[in-house]
Length: 95
Image (cartoon, rainbow, N blue to C red; front, side):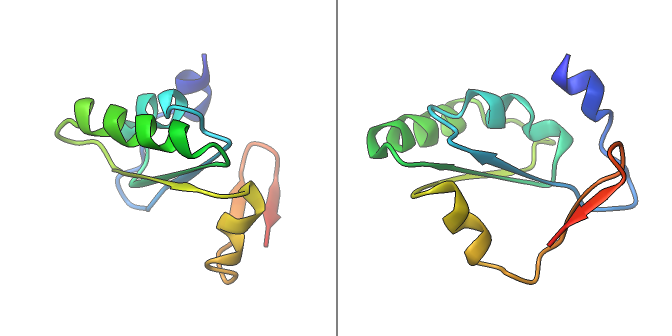
């Protein structure tokens, strides 16, 4: 249901996904073929170890890059404060 709601990856633009509190990476990895880059963040360091292992195990041609880091969800937005996140379906842009 989530893949259908996101729709196919557009050929003429870049698409990114932030998976906050990603756990072992299931959500991020299963959606990686719809994005150019997926970044997961999780406070549990053991989960990040498993997320990275799962990403390596499930790497496939045509999938976007997948990365995982440990930390708080709000920390991921502090790394690149110039990024803008938009949701066309909701008609919003977050800064």
